[in-house]
Length: 186
Image (tube, rainbow, N blue to C red):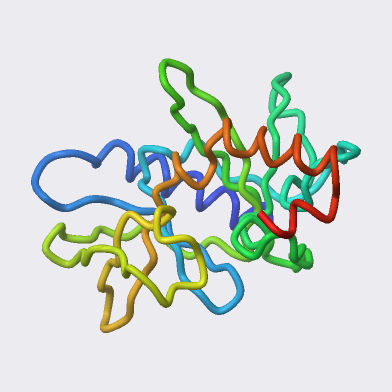
């Protein structure tokens, strides 16, 4: 697993160096269940092995806990649970944490997202990205930046700042503290 993480970290570094210019954008792709998702490579800081989480009591189910990342406390969000309102993902052999940088107003936050497996860094032409569907997706439409067409299949490109909105997650945490059943209704 550590070799996979090292090679993925190298891929992220190379992609960041080559990012920019033209109407081709680079995305880190990963799987959650049977779906393929992507986040803009410029949001990705690193990929680490899953483990050493400290659980925080009275948090929504999608917040798995926090990790110590070189002295910084970084929350870890179970992305599948975030999308399904609380159904926690099982940890598998290829489960890892992608550390992303999220901007909220003038602040930047590092947040870990738990994914089933990291796939690869892809370049997707802007012309190959369709607008998000208005209905039918398993996740909220405002979480989707677009649908990238890659080798005849769609990759769901996430609007990561919206998915990991610190304000919204704090609100959900407050709701969970007041009533654990209320979080499933949100």
